[in-house]
Image (cartoon, rainbow, N blue to C red; front, side, top):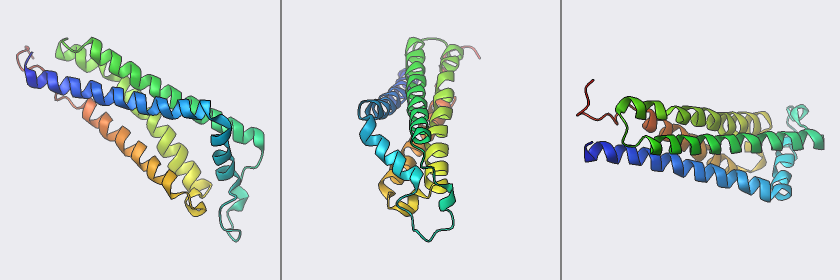
Length: 173
């Protein structure tokens, strides 16, 4: 196998593993600092930081059980995303020197992880938290920046990993 192909495959494993660690740390932080982070979720869902004049305050969810349930769903989504990225990195690492066909198949978990991550960060945060609960109006721009960072990084790494640019040219087609 040529050095260039090996370097591309290794970069895909490292990037995927990096996302597994990053997302895993976020999930772990939410689990180990549950009460402190739940406060933010409750505040966003209760829409307590939006303009009192907005006609959209009817969207607020103030029931503590519903707020906790939403936070648990978020943590589960983040945890599953981290595990899928970990499975992707492990699968690709196990097939590092395998044929191009086998290595390509080993990238399937990446598609799963990117899909899960997109649901968590884009749909969960950008759509639901930011637009439905008007998080953008509550002065939480740092959260929105992180949401964008997570979404775009996840998608771009997914696009790179799933590219068919890691074929061994010495193999028969």
